[in-house]
Image 1 (cartoon, rainbow, N blue to C red):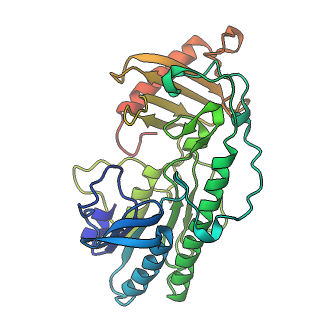
Image 2 (image 1 turned 90 degrees about the horizontal axis):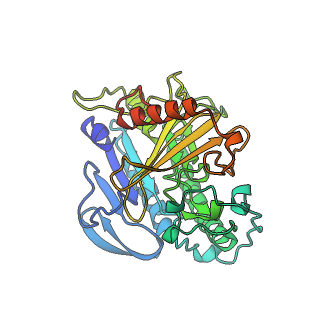
Amino acid sequence: MQRYLHEAGYTTALLGKYLNHWPKENPPPYFDRFSVGKLYKDRVFHVDGRMKEIKGYAPDYLASRASRLLRKFETDDERPWFMLLAPSNPHVPSTPAPRHKDVHIPRWRGSPAAKEKDLSDKPPMLYRGNIIPSKATPRRVLYGKMARNLLAADQLVNQVDRTMRSLGERSNTLAFFVSDSGYTLGEHGLLKKNKPYPVVSRVPLYMRWPRGPVEEGVRDRRLVANIDILPTVLEAAGLSPVDGHTIDGRSLQSTQARSRMLVEAFASSGAHFWASLIRDDEQYTEYYQLDGETRAFTEYYDVLRDPWRLTNTLGDDDPRNDPDPQTVRGLSTQLEADRDCAGSDCP
């Protein structure tokens, strides 16, 4: 996205985390201004071509620099701007700002998935040593740390919003509020990311553009994904994909609706290959061996009856609740096709 906008004449800025494993000493491409770094206290950031130690709480620095850059960008009304603001909150170690470390957080009771009593139907490859725990337990302490950590992110968003309001740009700025993925806090006896369950894949995606075609307070119940942001931005900016560049996703300003969504994970950083097909009424997931193709485990959930994915009907040793074999074959065939698909007509 930054390349399209940069080459169209936008001033571009990146503040915060960039791609995983990106060498910090390398400038992020197609960004005019940047502060690349992550996590929280006394961190080294790559700032516009030089390494700089950021003293204090890094998300506060990102909020201040974002406001300064926005004011600078507004000195040139003829040139539009694009900013990607990516603080680490609430990523572990979830260090709160000093002013928030003693804030009282109500005790988290835990979701139904964090209190699951029988995990025997779950894929063993998701667990350390392939050993499935006897039951799930809510990670309440980590929940509290993350909640305190997020208070600084709330203040960051508020500071940037107030800056745009003071510049008169709040109403005419297309803005997205989105997360990379959710985090299991004991759901299904798991911790961290890279899992095919809704606590990971269902993340906030808010879009606002008061002077544009985005109506205030409207909730769109379509299945949407982060791949939809690029085509949405290109349409808003009046730009077209370059020849030879296939873009997945579709503009959120369109009336198109997905019937299903593809979610995938690849074997890296201790994760496993899996691919999942999600519909409003069902979810089908295949886990693969290291070749990425040989099926090792299968999950099927009736989403309407079981929104928390407590009973894998293909793994609970009860054939009475299994979907029809022909249905499973059809889902597997569809999943294989979706994994190979490219372009805006894909899920």
